[in-house]
Amino acid sequence: MPTTTPIIVRPERPGDEAAIARVNDEAFGQADESRIVAAVRRNGHAAISLVAVSAGAIVGHILFTPVSLEPGDATFQGLGLGPMAVAPTLQRRGIGSELVTAGLVECAKAGCDVVVVVGHPEFYPRFGFRRGSAYDLRCEFDVPDEVFMAAELRPGALAGRRGVVRYLSEFSQT
Image 1 (cartoon, helix red, strand yellow):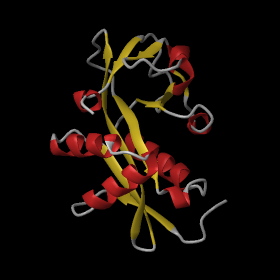
Image 2 (cartoon, one colour):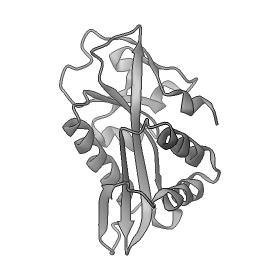
Image 3 (spheres, helix red, strand yellow):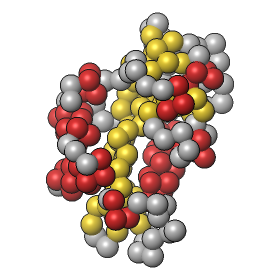
């Protein structure tokens, strides 16, 4: 069911940090994701960070960070989606979908060819994500095949590529 209060999706800006941490902590029920977001921000590795705002309050957040492909491929332009969080009281109202849609548009504008995600296999395919294994991609983390997905933002971007997708070190330090 869509929310009745308009949602505005905009880039993260200074001063949003505490609200972003709160949304991630509440959505995930623990602080691992907010620690990842803070570490990525502190190290200057956030490629795209967007927030969803409703009635002046941040109610959602999505982060995209650089990923690499091994064996090495200097022409690979990939980003990892995650974490993505929506305040628990507002979940299942389309806010996450708005964040993903806006985020993928920003990724394409930034010249990104591919986005990968570890996430719900029922949610992400509607945005063009397919199992990473369909592209001969594997995730560096030990996750079930159906939860590691990739989307080509430039058709054919994954043609002839294969390997292990590596995330930033911040994702391994929680």
